[in-house]
Length: 283
Image (cartoon, rainbow, N blue to C red; front, side):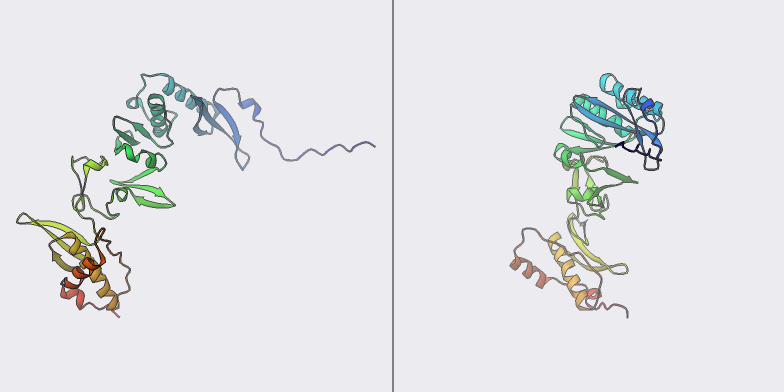
């Protein structure tokens, strides 16, 4: 019995065979059926993607550029221009692989006892080697002079990694000791205000810690001789406000290393400004 001839599919697939002649170029098809080209190369047994391109010739130029970066030792980051077929981030990753033998998906270049995270040709951040693992898998984003990382689907302020509050203000809550606000090495960071609602100032050569809380503007809680007292006063103000009917959610301070009995003694003896004691929410 003769088999019936199989019907040919009516769906026409793009003919990609003729586009595979250039080295480092791989044709691919989008969901809508249109053709595009991927560029990639292999160096020291590692396969590296160089990006996707609308034209085969552009993909091949990216491949050639990648080969040049990896095999010509005289090429440096200073030679990058915006005419390059590769993004600046890819330049950083390839040159670091060439010079230091390790490939990162983020634009990291390893130096002596530190590493550089290159956001752009004109903006480079510096970090301790202890932070290398974290930033090799976390992309840094920039908004003005504020830096963020994407962590579990959220944007997290970069300084929070170093024990600095998310809303901290440079010069008031923390300092870059050498004056370089791109140098995030821990030896260069000084935290001035660890606790929520606490500001340290100096009067007659002595530190004064002022506690304030924000309810339709900042309200004074009091001034105290230690940061811990001011932080506990902030917590006490939260309790008073809640008792008086305030529904706003506040983040209390955690005083590390303090025993519950010591905390209770300080809490009980702290004086709180009348504005907090008499506060009532508007109806």
